[in-house]
Length: 217
Image 1 (cartoon, one colour):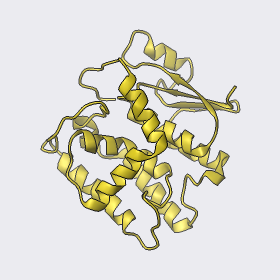
Image 2 (spheres, one colour):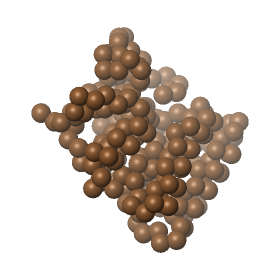
Image 3 (cartoon, helix red, strand yellow):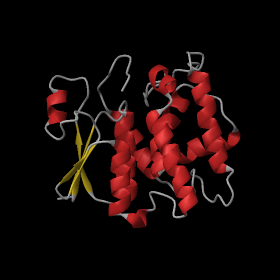
Image 4 (spheres, one colour):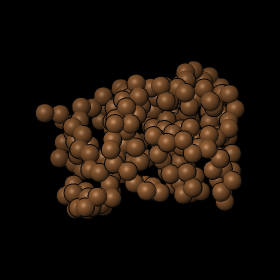
Protein backbone atom coordinates (compact mmCIF):
# COMPACT_ATOMS: atom_id res chain seq x y z
CA UNK A 1 0.00 0.00 0.00
CA UNK A 2 1.34 3.45 -0.94
CA UNK A 3 2.08 5.96 1.79
CA UNK A 4 -0.28 8.60 0.36
CA UNK A 5 -3.54 8.98 -1.56
CA UNK A 6 -4.13 11.63 -4.20
CA UNK A 7 -7.72 12.37 -5.21
CA UNK A 8 -8.09 13.91 -8.66
CA UNK A 9 -10.66 14.62 -11.37
CA UNK A 10 -10.72 13.80 -15.08
CA UNK A 11 -7.24 13.92 -16.61
CA UNK A 12 -8.46 15.53 -19.80
CA UNK A 13 -10.15 18.46 -18.10
CA UNK A 14 -9.02 18.99 -14.51
CA UNK A 15 -6.14 21.46 -14.63
CA UNK A 16 -5.75 21.66 -10.86
CA UNK A 17 -5.60 17.88 -10.59
CA UNK A 18 -2.80 17.88 -13.17
CA UNK A 19 -0.81 20.36 -11.09
CA UNK A 20 -1.10 18.35 -7.88
CA UNK A 21 -0.40 15.06 -9.64
CA UNK A 22 2.78 16.32 -11.31
CA UNK A 23 4.04 17.69 -8.00
CA UNK A 24 3.38 14.36 -6.33
CA UNK A 25 5.17 12.51 -9.12
CA UNK A 26 8.21 14.77 -8.89
CA UNK A 27 8.32 14.45 -5.11
CA UNK A 28 8.90 10.72 -5.30
CA UNK A 29 6.30 10.11 -2.58
CA UNK A 30 4.43 6.90 -3.45
CA UNK A 31 0.71 7.48 -3.75
CA UNK A 32 -2.49 5.67 -4.67
CA UNK A 33 -4.57 7.57 -7.21
CA UNK A 34 -8.32 8.01 -6.73
CA UNK A 35 -9.96 9.46 -9.84
CA UNK A 36 -13.47 10.89 -9.44
CA UNK A 37 -15.06 11.83 -12.79
CA UNK A 38 -16.36 15.38 -12.55
CA UNK A 39 -19.86 16.48 -13.52
CA UNK A 40 -21.24 12.98 -12.95
CA UNK A 41 -24.02 11.91 -10.59
CA UNK A 42 -22.76 11.94 -7.02
CA UNK A 43 -19.28 13.25 -7.85
CA UNK A 44 -19.49 16.06 -5.28
CA UNK A 45 -20.39 13.69 -2.45
CA UNK A 46 -17.47 11.45 -3.39
CA UNK A 47 -15.08 14.39 -3.17
CA UNK A 48 -16.61 15.58 0.11
CA UNK A 49 -15.82 12.18 1.59
CA UNK A 50 -12.15 13.20 1.42
CA UNK A 51 -12.35 16.95 2.12
CA UNK A 52 -15.11 19.36 3.12
CA UNK A 53 -13.63 21.88 0.65
CA UNK A 54 -15.26 19.79 -2.06
CA UNK A 55 -12.53 20.33 -4.65
CA UNK A 56 -9.74 18.31 -6.23
CA UNK A 57 -6.89 17.60 -5.90
CA UNK A 58 -6.69 16.30 -2.35
CA UNK A 59 -3.59 14.73 -0.83
CA UNK A 60 -3.95 12.42 2.16
CA UNK A 61 -0.61 11.58 3.77
CA UNK A 62 0.49 10.49 7.22
CA UNK A 63 -2.93 11.24 8.72
CA UNK A 64 -3.02 14.73 7.17
CA UNK A 65 -5.31 16.05 4.46
CA UNK A 66 -4.11 18.81 2.13
CA UNK A 67 -6.75 19.97 -0.32
CA UNK A 68 -5.32 22.68 -2.58
CA UNK A 69 -2.70 22.40 -5.34
CA UNK A 70 -0.16 24.97 -4.24
CA UNK A 71 -0.46 23.87 -0.62
CA UNK A 72 0.10 20.29 -1.77
CA UNK A 73 3.28 21.44 -3.49
CA UNK A 74 4.53 23.23 -0.40
CA UNK A 75 3.75 20.20 1.75
CA UNK A 76 5.54 17.82 -0.59
CA UNK A 77 8.54 20.15 -0.77
CA UNK A 78 8.85 19.80 3.01
CA UNK A 79 8.24 16.05 3.02
CA UNK A 80 10.72 15.40 0.20
CA UNK A 81 13.28 18.25 0.12
CA UNK A 82 15.63 16.11 -1.94
CA UNK A 83 13.18 16.28 -4.87
CA UNK A 84 14.04 19.94 -5.53
CA UNK A 85 10.45 21.09 -5.96
CA UNK A 86 11.63 24.64 -5.22
CA UNK A 87 14.97 26.07 -6.40
CA UNK A 88 17.80 25.68 -3.90
CA UNK A 89 19.01 29.29 -4.12
CA UNK A 90 17.03 31.70 -1.94
CA UNK A 91 16.50 34.43 -4.53
CA UNK A 92 15.41 31.97 -7.21
CA UNK A 93 13.15 30.25 -4.69
CA UNK A 94 11.45 33.54 -3.83
CA UNK A 95 10.97 34.32 -7.52
CA UNK A 96 9.57 30.84 -8.19
CA UNK A 97 7.11 31.20 -5.30
CA UNK A 98 5.95 34.60 -6.60
CA UNK A 99 5.46 33.23 -10.11
CA UNK A 100 3.62 30.14 -8.87
CA UNK A 101 1.35 32.35 -6.77
CA UNK A 102 0.68 34.64 -9.74
CA UNK A 103 -0.36 31.62 -11.77
CA UNK A 104 -2.49 30.37 -8.90
CA UNK A 105 -4.42 33.63 -8.51
CA UNK A 106 -4.35 35.19 -11.97
CA UNK A 107 -4.95 34.77 -15.70
CA UNK A 108 -8.73 34.64 -15.43
CA UNK A 109 -9.24 35.29 -19.15
CA UNK A 110 -7.12 32.29 -20.17
CA UNK A 111 -8.94 30.12 -17.63
CA UNK A 112 -12.37 31.28 -18.87
CA UNK A 113 -11.86 31.32 -22.61
CA UNK A 114 -9.27 28.55 -22.95
CA UNK A 115 -10.49 25.72 -20.69
CA UNK A 116 -8.15 22.75 -20.53
CA UNK A 117 -9.06 20.03 -23.02
CA UNK A 118 -5.96 18.00 -23.75
CA UNK A 119 -7.57 15.82 -26.43
CA UNK A 120 -8.73 18.70 -28.65
CA UNK A 121 -7.39 21.32 -31.04
CA UNK A 122 -9.28 24.63 -31.03
CA UNK A 123 -7.10 27.32 -32.62
CA UNK A 124 -7.56 31.10 -32.56
CA UNK A 125 -9.12 31.74 -29.16
CA UNK A 126 -6.72 34.62 -28.33
CA UNK A 127 -9.16 37.28 -29.57
CA UNK A 128 -11.45 36.77 -26.57
CA UNK A 129 -11.50 39.64 -24.02
CA UNK A 130 -8.37 39.74 -21.87
CA UNK A 131 -6.77 36.64 -23.37
CA UNK A 132 -4.05 38.48 -25.34
CA UNK A 133 -2.99 40.37 -22.20
CA UNK A 134 -2.81 37.16 -20.17
CA UNK A 135 -0.83 35.41 -22.90
CA UNK A 136 1.65 38.30 -23.10
CA UNK A 137 2.23 38.19 -19.36
CA UNK A 138 2.74 34.41 -19.34
CA UNK A 139 5.24 34.65 -22.20
CA UNK A 140 6.99 37.47 -20.35
CA UNK A 141 7.33 35.27 -17.25
CA UNK A 142 8.59 32.27 -19.20
CA UNK A 143 11.03 34.32 -21.27
CA UNK A 144 12.43 36.08 -18.21
CA UNK A 145 13.03 32.82 -16.36
CA UNK A 146 14.56 31.03 -19.34
CA UNK A 147 16.95 33.93 -20.00
CA UNK A 148 17.82 34.46 -16.33
CA UNK A 149 21.43 34.56 -15.13
CA UNK A 150 22.84 31.14 -14.49
CA UNK A 151 19.79 29.37 -15.92
CA UNK A 152 20.65 25.75 -16.61
CA UNK A 153 18.08 23.24 -17.81
CA UNK A 154 14.93 23.09 -19.93
CA UNK A 155 12.50 24.21 -17.24
CA UNK A 156 11.84 27.63 -15.72
CA UNK A 157 14.40 27.22 -12.94
CA UNK A 158 16.47 24.42 -14.44
CA UNK A 159 14.92 21.19 -13.14
CA UNK A 160 11.20 20.43 -13.11
CA UNK A 161 9.56 21.90 -10.02
CA UNK A 162 6.37 23.31 -8.54
CA UNK A 163 6.38 26.36 -10.79
CA UNK A 164 6.49 24.13 -13.90
CA UNK A 165 3.64 22.01 -12.53
CA UNK A 166 1.63 25.19 -12.02
CA UNK A 167 2.14 26.16 -15.66
CA UNK A 168 1.69 22.66 -17.14
CA UNK A 169 -2.06 23.17 -17.81
CA UNK A 170 -1.19 26.47 -19.51
CA UNK A 171 1.23 24.61 -21.75
CA UNK A 172 -1.68 22.33 -22.63
CA UNK A 173 -3.95 25.30 -23.30
CA UNK A 174 -1.39 27.02 -25.51
CA UNK A 175 -1.00 23.86 -27.59
CA UNK A 176 -4.75 23.20 -27.75
CA UNK A 177 -5.53 26.75 -28.86
CA UNK A 178 -2.50 27.26 -31.12
CA UNK A 179 -0.98 30.20 -29.26
CA UNK A 180 1.97 31.80 -31.06
CA UNK A 181 5.08 32.24 -28.91
CA UNK A 182 8.83 32.84 -29.18
CA UNK A 183 11.10 29.90 -29.93
CA UNK A 184 12.49 29.78 -26.37
CA UNK A 185 8.96 29.43 -24.99
CA UNK A 186 8.11 26.88 -27.64
CA UNK A 187 11.11 24.82 -26.50
CA UNK A 188 9.90 25.13 -22.92
CA UNK A 189 6.41 23.87 -23.81
CA UNK A 190 7.99 20.91 -25.59
CA UNK A 191 10.12 20.11 -22.53
CA UNK A 192 7.04 20.13 -20.29
CA UNK A 193 5.01 18.13 -22.83
CA UNK A 194 7.77 15.53 -23.16
CA UNK A 195 8.44 15.13 -19.44
CA UNK A 196 7.76 11.43 -18.68
CA UNK A 197 5.14 12.10 -16.00
CA UNK A 198 3.35 14.49 -18.35
CA UNK A 199 3.35 11.87 -21.09
CA UNK A 200 1.87 9.38 -18.64
CA UNK A 201 -0.93 11.82 -17.79
CA UNK A 202 -1.59 12.60 -21.47
CA UNK A 203 -1.85 8.92 -22.37
CA UNK A 204 -4.43 8.41 -19.63
CA UNK A 205 -6.33 11.56 -20.68
CA UNK A 206 -6.52 10.30 -24.25
CA UNK A 207 -7.97 6.99 -23.05
CA UNK A 208 -10.76 8.56 -20.98
CA UNK A 209 -14.29 8.20 -22.32
CA UNK A 210 -15.89 11.03 -20.33
CA UNK A 211 -16.88 14.21 -22.14
CA UNK A 212 -17.70 17.50 -20.44
CA UNK A 213 -19.39 20.02 -22.72
CA UNK A 214 -17.82 23.51 -22.71
CA UNK A 215 -15.45 22.57 -19.90
CA UNK A 216 -14.54 25.27 -17.40
CA UNK A 217 -12.74 23.13 -14.84
